[in-house]
Length: 492
Image (cartoon, rainbow, N blue to C red; front, top):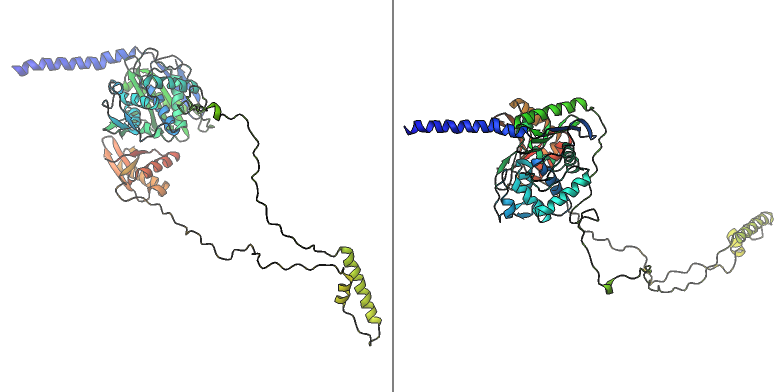
């Protein structure tokens, strides 16, 4: 009897859940205004736009700016990827989606960045802002300064994560431009947005947009977003051959319809964009950090001098005094002039003619004697160098330091537990073919690695395993520069 009574309850709960997922959520999302924009990322030319300048709720697209400033802070030495970040109670209390951080916990910045980029974790985004600027409010002000410098004229940020807040608004155009800046300004970090999963310090997290990444050829990012007020948002970028397109959607009704619409927009962008076009990278905005050098909003370090120590007059530098060299007195050396030499030669010729015409009994005079007598008698011979003077010649060979040959090799002490993934393919044969092609293209870094095909539920992953972290990172960056799909595979 109890089982029979429980069945109606279970069926009722199931019906309520079905109504919530397929009726209430789509209706609430449908109320969100729709906007879209498609851009040729190489030139920045807009290919298609619908309500592109309407100010709407960006939701977690906000984290694109949070991560942009994090990359900027790392590159300018404000903070390091390996710095331990202390999690505040404010960050730990953020609602889902979240990593599950605890107040008082310490975690490296690199894991917070992965959680924010891949899982779209709100607690991680808040912790990043607090680590860089001290508080989320100060970080939001820096976000607005950076947005203004980028030309995002219709965007206002109030927090680091994108949860709905009064006045926290942006547009499809502004978010598309932000996505373009992420790709061109920080290419070394862009691969984060294409990772299907990543280890975030406490656990491995899955990408919120892995469905589109797996289903649309060439897709490699960038960011999803959802709140009831915003609907289903997405900024997506894809590359095919020499073409790269960015498409943005605000106000999608569901994940499925949003992804389908973004795929249509990306197809539209590839159809309308020329195959070849001059790349016009966006101008990098001025650095707005704590160590900024006079930029708007930059808080430069102030050095105050005491009045007594202040420089009052700038004097011209004086030359360094040179010690007096010991004087050497030398006797004057007289040199025969050109006239004396000519006179001596004429005298010698005359003497030679006279010697030919003279009788044989008369003794002959040597020409050298005539030349010597014709030259000035006060010509002084060179003075012999004193014995105490030492010639400037190296008398003993210099013993140079032996040249040390530096040999670089991959460590075999257990650090070769990283790998890289170069794509997911419909067959094992296709995955092995791509592995061989990639190995031949990047033999310098992949030499000695293990080619491995891993079967998944929706295809076969092509992996290179047995790499160090540094080699895997270098290989990925080199392959991405050659237009290969690549992301790092962490140990574990």
